[in-house]
Image (cartoon, rainbow, N blue to C red):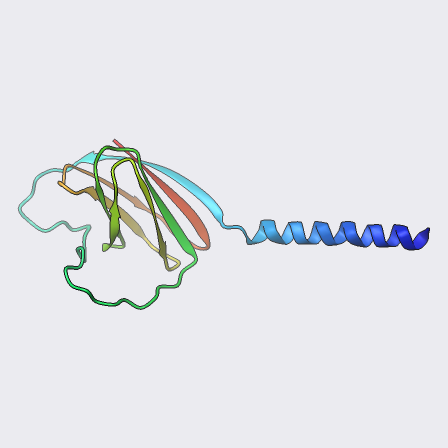
Length: 136
């Protein structure tokens, strides 16, 4: 009888330990709703953009990072996405897309393909999962 109780206790303890570890290894999810701003026309370069979409095929080294960013586009516009000023992709109208970046990004900037609306936010991502909900 003691052996059965001891084995039951060990099984219960193993379940508790494994459940606790699985909860600790999940990324923290942060949701940010970002409202658009109408883009004012200017003659100069956009200060929020360092590199534009590539026009040639150049292989990029695999980027490792623990921070993932989901761009959830709640608009009828296609949107270009930049992280720390560098082009990361385009999100379809009413669509969404993921970007994995290294820890410690500082800015997210999005602009409609036609340059009508823009969104920007600052953050510090470290082993987290951000969702940027883009709305007009």
